[in-house]
Amino acid sequence: MRIQCLKHVPFEGPAAIAQWADERGHPVELSPLYDGVEPPDQDGFDWLVVMGGPMGVADEATYPWLAGEKAFIRRSIDAGKTVIGICLGAQLLAEVLGARVYRNPEKEIGWMPIELTDAGRGSHCFGFLPPSLDVFHWHGDTFELPPGAVHLARSAVCAHQAFIWDSRVLGLQFHLESTPQSVADIVTECADELVPAPHIQSAETMLAKPVAEYADLHSALWGILDRLSA
Image (cartoon, rainbow, N blue to C red; front, side, top):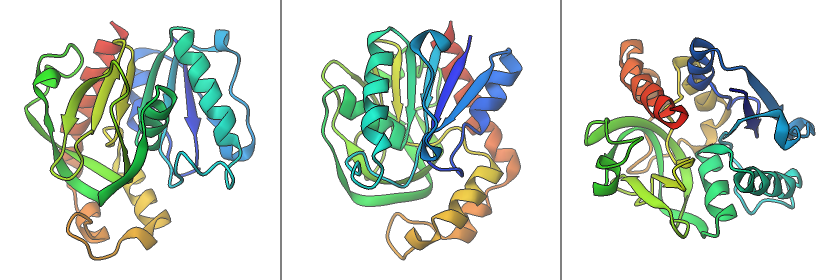
């Protein structure tokens, strides 16, 4: 299985998704859109993974490649690919599938829990997870559920944290792929967002996460990806 990964900034890559793919023998090809790299033809990959980034889905004037990326995501969905969107990637999936993306009432940055919905607890790809799970967040925008999507998870300040559409298009507002290095990178690159607010943790708090506790995060990620690929 060949995985194509769309990157929006240098410091947000597949991280632990690449580790999972390497363990399973799935090659991962990166498309750094910010460098003008065009993604491949549809016959060049099986899965599409769309990563996060600090821009918004409507920022096409500043990032003109966003328009082409949305068209590419739409073609990938129409071609029957498995598509996974993370943070900005989930917002792009929501918009491409016909849902509104908008500013969340609160920014959510740091280690905070998500809670599975009833549908999430009964779903094939999320049903093995505990009812509540601490995950890494870094977002200010959110999305409505696309028509036909199944709502999988919520948090205290963001109703729509995860959805699945047609059993193969998965949007995750949060980051299960995070590693100590990827968290350190985004804390450094996006430090201007770390202002006092109810749901924004300090850099020190985020970086203090014990390395051993990333195992729970990656166990959840591995389980979801294995179920999607089954």
